[in-house]
Image (cartoon, rainbow over all chains, first blue to last red; front, side, top):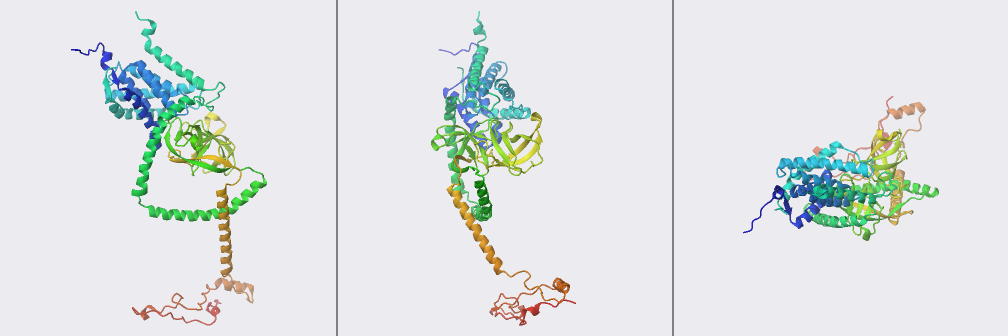
Length: 175
Length: 389
């Protein structure tokens, strides 16, 4: 009788997703991100694609997969803005890589840790966007609004809890 | 023993991904870029078109569905206060027509003066109404998506307005959708003029979504509450469109000696549902406006004639003032001390004439009241009380 045996802790804690979920979930959240600020303008501070990037990176725990997922989601998000392509792509690629890498060190199933990680990665993305605009694009008008970015990180962390709960339903064991 | 690439596979892949995106970024910016005002990604329309084609049609479907549901609710189910609103709107329309008639003469004079100066005013000749179906999703990029595109006659750089005021201009236009760059985006700009002082400035968006004029030095003529309109100098927005009102004037430490004049936009940029895209302008008054102006002028003329006729028929205020005084001073004092004159009695009495109704104790229930002529003197002038010596 064949048995599935896990040869490493990495394989034990890695999750996969159905291809449809991998494709449709980021698109759905990108669509929500485009439509919600129209109805509730204050929700423009939210970044649902970032939350989805962090979730997939934490679940898969594969740095390359996390970077590629972040890149694709970021490029799609760039397409809806008037930024050049690559602004959100670079930021989310690095966030996805770091989130997948940190998954080996901490227990990412814990709600408090998920909230803290989302808060930290949101601030990391804000820093990366600031660096891209100032160092790569030479955009001096891009202001560093610390309070606004802290608020954004807090909102993302709070929204991440139900989003992670919903997406947890679609996890499958192993790749 | 693992090779270098095997040991550091993950970081190397990340570096390769980031490097590739940096190269894509560099390809999108022109070499002579100075600042962030230049085209940003306009050459990469294929990628942007794919992204927009993937996301925005779904947003359009969701928007139209919600619109249908909302229309059914508001048009058939939720009809509270419709009658009161209707009556109030009718009153508003009547009042506005009167105001329009009053302004008709001033507007006609303004046009005559413009013709004398050979001034080329651009009037809006055609517009396309469009629904807002989505946003950019980022508070760093103030953009909207419309449900109309090239197929509906839209083109890049066309101005977008609402009845309240200016909204922005079209940026990228796709076959069935279009992007609107709002005036409060950092990359947006518009030529404006302060209506009261006629000072010209350039309007720009700020990172926190406000709108400012930051190329003017301190001037005592600029005050909070001043109305700001488009100047027409940017060749994008027609002249005279409302932009907003000055809210505050502060010195800008980052751009000395200029001031930061913050504007509150006339249009609510965060709650836009439907907008108008100006697809055509002309230097002569459009037909509809001409007809409105003629109707307003006719109404104003009719009102003036009616006012003249009423003025002729009404008696003058000092018609009965005493003119044959032995001493002018005495007659003036007599006029000052005289009580107000009583009205002349009516020629044909009816029940509404003063004093025609009998006293209450003479009335009987069920018996009709016959008007009785009050006791009066033959000469109405004797009703005026004699002045006290």
